[in-house]
Length: 175
Image (tube, rainbow, N blue to C red; front, side):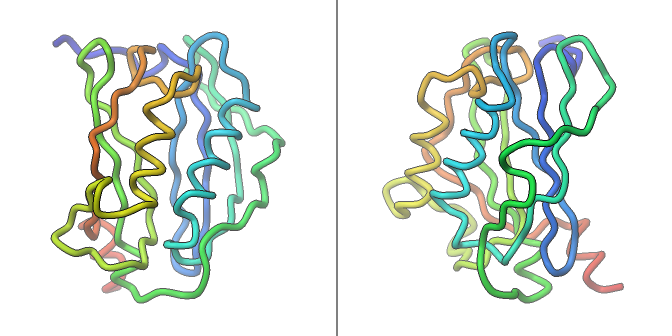
């Protein structure tokens, strides 16, 4: 498939800070998606799995509209929200829980959050093994204007989440 421009959808960028690092995740939306839709998705995901992460706070939210490559800071419901609990080890702060899948158009999709403090097991948790992973997979599987990939089409998540330390953040923890 030919590459797509990254600005084909609305995008909301949520920056969060744990005791060690700041990270960011992005929510994409169709032309009818609003910041309230993105906030509702973030609230649902963090409610489902937030307690499995190191204590973190959403410190910044930015929005970029369809066709635009510039981000603008916005004030919204999630700004200042806290999720997770406790402090982690350097390895836990570097560990990411990543959901993957494809869009209706066949484009790859992924969504990840750093600071996983539960067991990594075999580096994958299936929806049948883990109730929180199942809850997030089910959230992404529903129809919503924010459940889209780079092509603006509906996301079909895999029924698992990958769990592993990110090489960049492992290296950063050694410094």
